[in-house]
Length: 392
Image 1 (cartoon, rainbow, N blue to C red):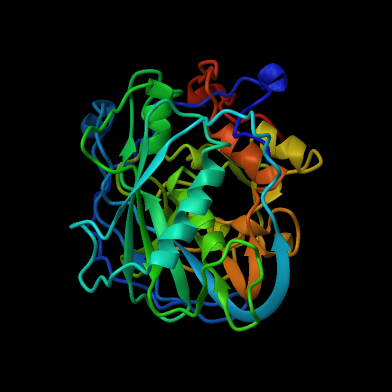
Image 2 (image 1 turned 45 degrees about the vertical axis):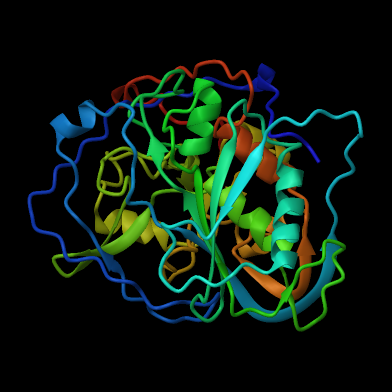
């Protein structure tokens, strides 16, 4: 398995503005949970409502501030059967451990209803983290809070960064949110002492296979696969785009009300090579952005992922009906049954994916997972050179 480590000789400079300012002048609806969706179901989802965006003055001053409103990214069961196993890449016994993970099981901040963790689940969890410890580079311990409880039917797990940080030491951009673990790795210090880096929930009401050999029966879901998938979301494989309602209109937005994007958001374009964070084309909190997010026509175009994908943009999951917790922050369904299957948003019975494909590794590298990245060259939006490296 390749490290989340970049060959930056071909890394083109990225430009990006520090200030994405959109001030809301109207009241926003209260946030509600949407109905769950399934792939290609054709079901219309009730979009979530939005809170008011931060003002310009609040955005300019962001520094060492945690973003606590982030939603967890879900991994869904699709009910199908795919008996296939992708084992982890062989690792040399001499290969160094490049990161350390710790887990707190059922911490006090878990939702109510937690149940005792099965010993076999903890063993499988540790196996998955051992894989990460050979591919992620960080001098700081990466701390995971893991909750074991009944989840909604069809949800295998859900996770995300506990907090996002902006404008910390060695940040690659100003006024851009980086997941806690990545912020620590870049800063080479703990930017939020005493807090976990990743928050994860796992279904206690699923028929799990806790082994690590991929011998999953047609009636079981592979737990190690779900841990690997969800921890990757906590490390930053997650964007801030949402679809919701404003004054009766369906609109899209990014930044979770702060007006600042996630690092993942910097690299997403539509089929016309238009970047979703370009507010001159798609205003933040607008019907135009909602249309793009439900277009089945979105691509991740960071240079590492672009090259790993055969010099093509990486298709993302963007179905016609927004699926909260699944849309946008996963690879497209076309990656099923490929080396990239792990980061598709749906898992089948009998399926075990214990390896990250080169596209996923490239995507994580594009967001900053590297021991010694150069500082990116971000320019003002008005220069129109802020677009990340590659074109579809």
